[in-house]
Image 1 (cartoon, helix red, strand yellow):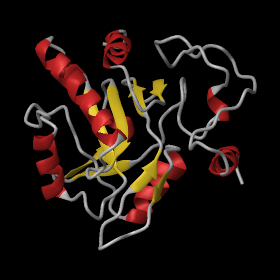
Image 2 (cartoon, rainbow, N blue to C red; image 1 turned 180 degrees about the vertical axis):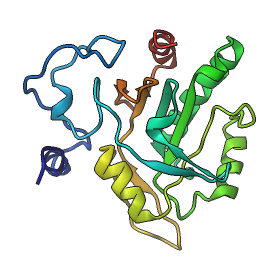
Image 3 (cartoon, rainbow, N blue to C red; image 1 turned 30 degrees about the vertical axis):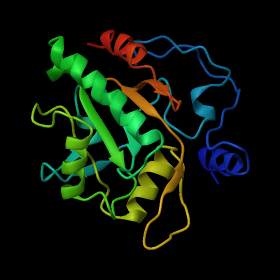
Image 4 (tube, rainbow, N blue to C red; image 1 turned 90 degrees about the vertical axis):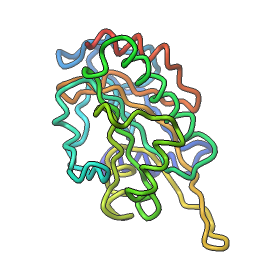
Length: 219
């Protein structure tokens, strides 16, 4: 069992789905622009890609565009999050936060300098038709070309990518009358144009203005 698998295992027994450690690591890296955030742990001690670490390599289908997106090949600052479209708790907050940042980018002339990459962990329901409808429900401007809904090819692939590689935990709740929900952790990643994490916002109430300010330093 490697370090990240161990941390995920220990986190599963606690009251939250996120974990943090406090082992040593160098305080700077040439791969990022933003300084190390004020925190009581180091990037290597957590199960998700954190400050200064390169995001896991993956190519994920973008069903509304009939192509695959290489997560390390975006070549511009990007904001990633993990969601499912029928969620009525934290997912609308995460998607709305990214939508508000998209609006700010379009209104302030940098819409082509940032990419938005929400990845669903519910590929069974979040097909192309559903994601197209969800974009309308959330008032996302899909036509400008900087927003890409990503959908792993299967439930197994979603688990391997999102949970095992990106450290976002999600557990399917019991099914009733064919309907089900997920209990899951919340995270937005700010990734630079070289694929390194500048910030991991691990909160259910992300601050769009803070993210915009951080993003500005990368443009």
